[in-house]
Figure 1 (tube, helix red, strand yellow):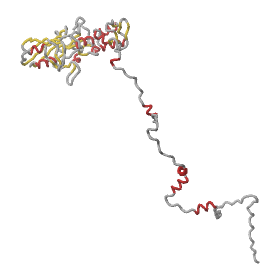
Figure 2: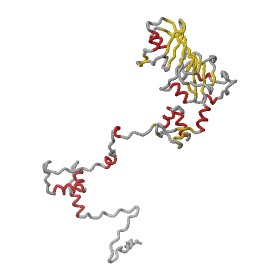
Figure 3: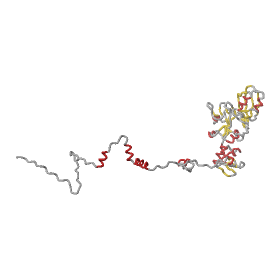
Length: 361
């Protein structure tokens, strides 16, 4: 019996009248639909010949806005670049940059010469107080700051105040008590101690001030560590010299002994060796110069064959030793025995005592 092969039924058409034909999406394993026919524009692009290397930039410029601007600029009519002569053009002021204007210095008012400025009237109060011997200038500033100074009965507590040189200046009781508490010490300095700042290998003379070597401990006040506060030598005495050395907390005494206008004389016993030149004694009294400056008149005389007595009213560095060298003598011993009206007396070597209330230089 022969079999009859029947054709499978065809699927229903996928077209709907009045609508677009939908292309079914290809599933896995099915062949992709044939490509659509190229449009006329695509054919035109495809038919264009390939560009040569290096012309890609040119094509990009033609397509870019820059290329369009260049093309439009070439189409514009060229303007004349001729400028009028420099003399015919008016000058154009250029504004200064903001930074320059900000950094420009502010103009200062014209300064008058120093001669045209009025001089400050009066004299500093501290200077007047020091010149009158009320205290030192350093102490004057301290008293003024504390309000312990009165000018014509009015309290002054501001530094730098200027007053009439003839004005009446008084101190408050607190300042007077402060001055009374400040001590002055007389020391018999041995050789090997420096009077001022310590030097390598040598101790300062102030190191000798203590309770152990106070000579007048039975008749005067006892030593207290506060006596060393601001205690300073009023004058120098060489390291290889001995004798009377004054140390004080009182600025009035310091000014009296070592001030520029000091009139207090000092007496020394000097042992010498060598032969003095002719007229040397007269030169020691007056006529010598040190450091290109003449010395003040002195009183110098022989005590015996090898000892001189000097009385000076100035104190330059190593003055007596240098004076003796100028006249052919060498100093082998020097001792200071008096300062003003205060004598060394029987004060033992290396000991000290307070300046008494009845003593004065």
